[in-house]
Each structure stands twice: as C-alpha cells, then as structure tokens.
Length: 139
Image: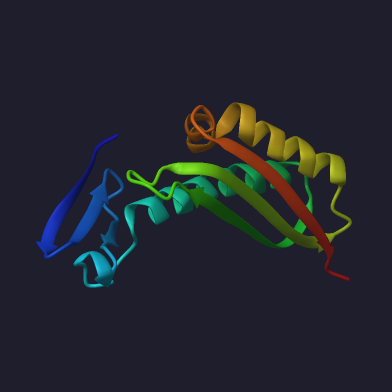
C-alpha cells in the first residue's frame, strides 16, 4: 500500500492512496491551520470505524441478518501532552433491523477484532479498545 499527502498551503494537505481517492487534511485555527479537512488523528479514528464496520456488516450479511441501518462510532481519548496519542478507544456498533440474532452480532464483532480488521489489530497492540453494541428493532 502506498499513500501520500501533497501540501496545498499553510497546514492544508490532500491525501491520496492506491485507490486514487483523495481526502482533505488540515489543522485547527488555533495551531495555524485553516480548519479545512480531517485532522490526521480524526482520520485514524474514521479508519478504525470503517475497517471494523466493513467486516461486521459483511459477516452479518453472510449470516443473512436483516440489518436495515448500521452505524459505528469511535470515541478515542487522547493524551493531554504531545504527541496526543490515543489512550483509550471505545467502539460502539448500533444496528437496527428485524430479528437480528444476538449471537451473530457478537460473533461478527469477535471476528472483526481477532481476525479481519487490521486497524483494530494494530491499534489494539498499543491502546485498550473496548467494544459495545446496541441492537434496535426496526418493527
């Protein structure tokens, strides 16, 4: 995998990778940025959410679960001092559907955590990651 950022101006960059898709990166006004684009650590949290979300929904679809809406929220605590690393990460999975099997959801989360999601596996080596879920009935 290859990725790069290209400087636009000030603290604004455009990130690209092998997919060819670009994403804006920037910094907050208080540190000299223009408040345009994702902060790099925000993007890391989004990456974690996306990685595990893709695993979980794929597994649940294979298990023929009737999921109508699905959201993954990541809340990452950061150190107060530089380099502001993540000190704890909470991932919350919110599923809405019809007759969703609790065991299928728990297995999908476990497989994402232990087998499929490289972002979760990598970050889990350096920070505690806690998982939680809510299953809501669509009926």
